[in-house]
Image 1 (cartoon, rainbow, N blue to C red):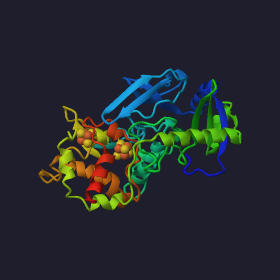
Image 2: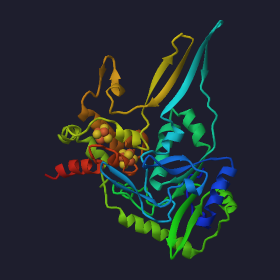
Image 3: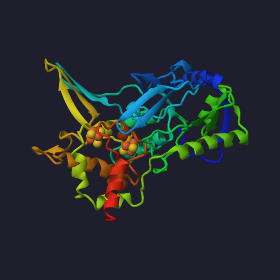
Image 4: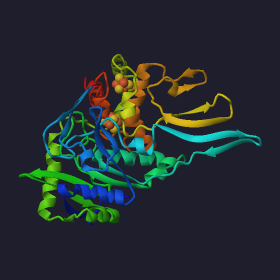
Length: 378
Ligand code: SF4
Ligand code: SF4
């Protein structure tokens, strides 16, 4: 998988009529192809083997606490912005068996769970989500506690990004320098272009595997003029972004306001439901649980996603450290935008806006940070 884009990247044109060939070439190369589908009135990442599986002609309307999928009659394959689920679920699943123990006549036998690793293609990953993978890589691949399960899956993925032509009402990727155009971390990056009754993709390839896949799909070299058209799509998308976050000094701003009254005010609305952490593409907190069968002959150890919004997450020695909603909301926001920098040298937020769209109380991280910033001026 490519780590960095260089000026040596190759550009191709792929006609929309050849898109099925692209899917066939991905699958023919042994990948499980995952991409956007329409399920339960939302964009859901799932298996894709045919153009018919893609959300052709669907767009999404997103605002704080609001998400609506709607048919817009466009021939676009990728005319939506983001669904609730992120790619994290394929690399770092919500529930994962770590260990199985079984009793036999000679005693207990413990076996680490070793599910076979499947080659996966992520088709349609957005630029902000590429950065989310880079953030997860920092957390789960570097340092003393690298995660072998994540590492095994991550090493096998083919990344086919799609640059954003549309933006959501909750996106703020440009404030976080993560979009709306992909600059690194992909094998292929597609820009969908529909003009004058023509429908095609400009495909930027950063790796030899990307070249192979796109050539098998009958991609042909793109002219400078076609590449400029693709750049114009990203420039136009950036202009549509209305939500902004002033990130100047945000790490220190939050760190010096840990007793700010705003935490309590916001906690008065927060349901501590944990939606924001579950939809966030970079949240990685887990808990570990053991289960035994009723006969006591076997047991398994499982890890599952947890959230800093639960009381149990900070429970030690007979009590929860963060036992109030305001302490838990503060933990979430300050970790994403402040202490993440200290831990990993990077922001924990990529500006995807999911936590705003899916918060039932319409709590908006950009408004919360701005309110604290504004309070220092008075
Ligand atoms: S901020 Fe919103 S989504 Fe997050 S825990 Fe509170 S109510 Fe739930
Ligand atoms: S904190 Fe919110 S906007 Fe930032 S990456 Fe997580 S879900 Fe997206």
